[in-house]
Image (cartoon, rainbow, N blue to C red):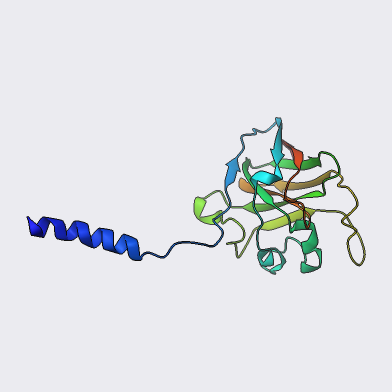
Length: 185
């Protein structure tokens, strides 16, 4: 009988020795369904997202937005994923409610799950697009947000598009509408 308890005690002991994770968890990705020839609209709230380190975005292997524009993406992020069929164009638009400064970025990735890394744990992307206010020098973050839009084209291969909606520095809450439409290229 004592030998039967030994494996159980060993498992319990190892569970107690396992370090607790105090670091940020991997961001949740909400799947979207939008077929070619369709458009969808949904509302979101940045308070349901989380902040994210941004070094991945300025990496030359991702090239999403430069470090000089990190202020536009230092708030909370919410992530979505949608399939882009071959011979298609996708338009992604985020419209902030009120005066919240909310921006959008997208990563074109392969369709196999092994090719669908999620920021900040991403080291390469097929391509990345971002939309945020254009300015020289320091940003005037007191100015309200404007709608932001990006697009991708698929020629001979389908892709998976990871959409990121992010608040500017200090924007950790704020409602927005996300519009996605897929049509012929």
